[in-house]
Length: 65
Image 1 (cartoon, rainbow, N blue to C red):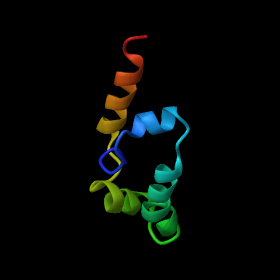
Image 2 (cartoon, rainbow, N blue to C red):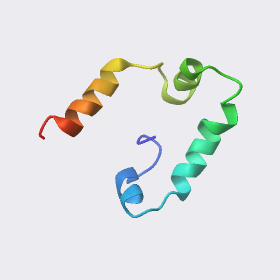
Image 3 (cartoon, helix red, strand yellow):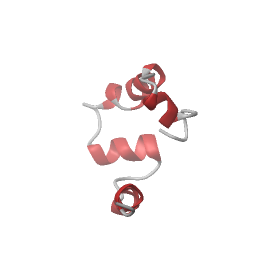
């Protein structure tokens, strides 16, 4: 989603969810019953579920605590 929405963090911080909800509706919600989670991830993100990405996120968020 960060690749498609400019200033995503700032929008979340300011409670501006309009563009985020629109992206979710167009890319995730409308396909929820058509594809498995893995297929949906591939369609919207270009790859399936990747534990390395999740680990990188967790490390960046909690490593300094």
